[in-house]
Length: 135
Image 1: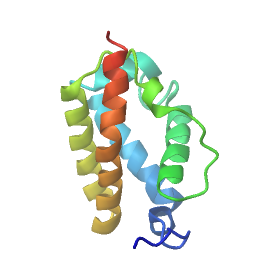
Image 2: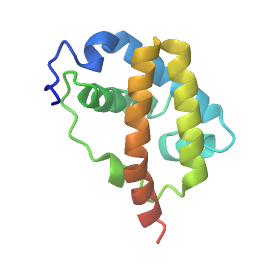
Image 3: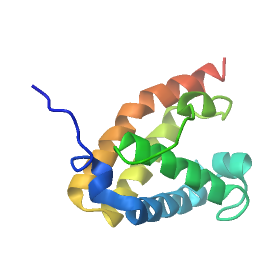
C-alpha cells in the first residue's frame, strides 16, 4: 500500500526554494553553453542570463515546486511548450545528462535522485510533443 504524500514528505520540503533556484540557474547556464542545446534555448528565450531568462526560470521554479509537492500556482502545459523547437532524442539525452550532472553537483543524493527520476518520467511526454511539432 502506498501512503499519500504529505507536505513534510514532499521532496520540496527537503529541497526548498533556494536550492531549487540555484539548481535551475546552474543547469540553464550549462544548457545555454552546450553546443547542442544552447542554440535551441538561445533562439527561443534569448541570451543567457538576460532576455527572457528570469521569467523562464521563475516559471520553471513554479513547475518544479508543483511536481515536488511544494506550493505553486503553476498552470502551464509543459508538453505543448516543447513543440516546434526542432529537437529530438539526442537533445533530450543531452538535457538529461546535464540535468543529472547539475543535480549531483548541487543537491544531496536523495533529492538529486528524486528530481532525476521525475525528469526521466517526463521526458517521454516532452519528446512526444516535440516530435508532433515536427510532423
